[in-house]
Length: 438
Image (cartoon, rainbow, N blue to C red; front, top):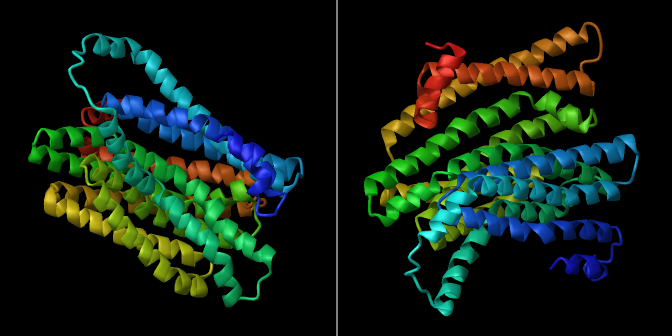
């Protein structure tokens, strides 16, 4: 598999020699990603989701950091070609995989004695025929692959339709269309996937307990764990999305400069909101898999994909770069609604707890959003009195200040109101003592 993009690149480059170095850089990721996935499965087999979830977040963080840094150095410092920048961005998948694998390795060495004791005490009474094992693996793997690639499938739809639709709607040249495509499909996507990965990785840690409750026939525990997954997701994703929307202007300038800065900031703001249904789909599709509802989850995703297809043309034609994001948001919202309706009918939620959590988290997130936005506007006005507020260094300082102000306000309100107790448990008391919050 690793050799295919190396030796077979000239055969699959579509006649464009510029694609060959990109395919070569992809080979490194193919070399290590299967090993990382198997290692995650090893931990999940022991009902330990934390190492897998944390490694996913570390992987995405390292990948995006390397991608942004390498693109900046290639294009701004070394004044290299876009081919080199894209190749390094593709190579970032390998960097992320290495970081994720190292994280898993650290967890393994920390807990290896526990694993050895479990193996030594095993009675080895379970015997499964190879044929049956392969059938079960395939039955589980196919839906897992489809759902895991759900967001990527939506992005591929954008990639293959955006240029064709925009040529019908406008007379823009290829360079302009490429810039518009990059702003929503590449630039903003790199940033929002950090929040999506963080929120989904934390929420999915509850899935093993969900599966265990289902196996034991404990319906009340299943309902409780379903609710905990959604509450944890809301606690992280809603403030993260609104926070990124508040700092979209300076954050966009930090990474992508002042070219098309107004449009780029608006697209990042809109993308931050669309990240909520994206993250929710990742989480509740994992819940469906934990409840052995893989095929049904794929059907619901297929419905959302059809909605995406139907809306893609009118949304893109009339809204330009915002159109694909809107069609993605609506398509995933439909899929999410179908999944949540099914979960509610067959397994249930603790609706009172979720209602309280949603109202408080939304209120505190909006207050955090306003505080962060006012910080950005205020600091920009102050800097404008003495200099240029749109430089990268100034934008970075404004971004950090707004993140600090917004983060402190949200954390204080969550701890003060005890809403954090529903998510963090006993650790909330320690944080209140540390921060001296009554």
